[in-house]
Image (cartoon, rainbow, N blue to C red; front, top):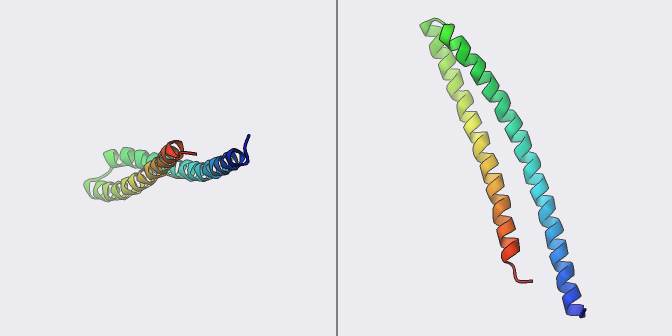
Length: 99
């Protein structure tokens, strides 16, 4: 092995290790967001049952609250998708790099 080759291998390994660490951080964030979204979805399902049995006035309030919950769920889901897309893009960039 030449010194140049060893240097390139060291650089590639360092970049790969750093990329894995960044991926782990994003995956941890995604897991937290998914758990939070699932809690909100569970609450929304419970409210849906209450809404079905509620008076019209209460049903409107419950529906409004469910709409807010659904917006929060959508926001968390979108962030998870963004994190996964960021990871995918980083993997593509790494694989396309000429070492």
